[in-house]
Image (spheres, rainbow over the protein chains, first blue to last red):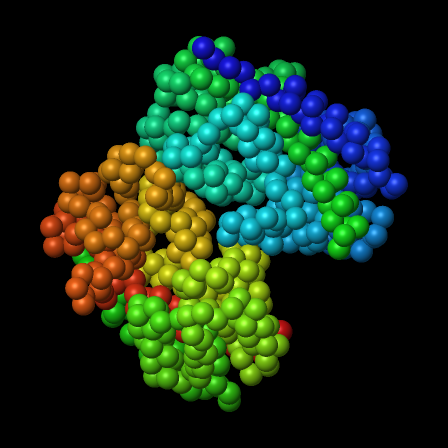
Length: 280
Length: 280
């Protein structure tokens, strides 16, 4: 029997708990989000983040820049937010337009205000097995979902497809810290099909509709769908859900799986960074 | 035909080049090495590092502590060395006795003096694809060896066995940055044999004599032996070299493969960190 990993339900539970915790604070945690350009998916995500923050009682400020904004403007704004005591968490919505270096932007964020847990210091801490100020939101959300359904990945072969700085790379490290055997695949990978077939836990973060098909997967595996792409006006995942559903033991729907977990994790990170700023 | 990856030869070339560069400096780079306890392997390695440094013209100071030294003593010493303008690079020889936290020690080292490139900031930079102040010595030495023999790993399946903070974990990230598909295995890994069989490039960093046998490997693969263990008085690697030699395309001997490359990389790091201190 297949169990659906219901990210919508778990994220609602998480945001409810956060709402109660935030209500007890004498000041609202404040998340600043930088959004550059007119990427419709990014605008959608930022909108959802803002809405969820409001619901919880977290203050959020979205700083919007046009597509042609230069790198210095963004770096200066990050520096200003780093030094602003009324801002507790900073998120730069990725991807950025080509003229702005993602790597420079990531490095500019203060690790203590790193809402997405992707600065070198936080990532390096995760790598050596030390608690970071914040874990990257999407990987954190995925692990919370596995925990909720008591899925133990120790000794299992986890295959991550995609190696972004916000999903694939940190997720691989976090799965390794939980004693999974981890393979990370990407656009240069040869015989991807053979590797997918050996996965006990498959995480696809590519953004290609129906990349993961029924005949590719191992029976009774756990399937986590992180990818998003558009088919017409519909946002879809990487996994051919309907056709492989019956074969697997656990699977995330898309939408309603990893997406809401990412947002709930961001809210948790914002709350935790707020608490950190008070104790720091 | 099988080619031996001659780490002894390449490391000699690297140290010769460094000797010439160091001779042109008006001050000697200074490497401080902290050694705790009486681990014979650690004492051997530290001795080799000191000897190589002297040959190149790098000043090295070995700070020796007894086995029962407490954590604070080591952390205080690191802090002192971080602030000492006459010290350009700091190495803490691992492993440490049980009462001293390896993670705390790694985090205490200044990233700008991190001779083994293992602090969170340097590891995190490697993860996001940014140049660190220093790369971890053993992974760096392995990549230099691959480069010397023009071995292109793009799209190849690289399997790393062992997930230490100084070898396995950073090596996995560095192989990924070179577009290999990377699998990282460890003590919890099930069906290790199947995974090894799929490796185009196999790196074993376990410390178990003859762990890697002829029947386990893929024909024409590249075999890198990082492990060390003792058989009687002899230091041996993980790979059953004599029996599988003819099957593979490239292989490191042990000793004479990765070991000397690690030391040469440490010397390069020390030189580079010295230069950094001058430009910083």
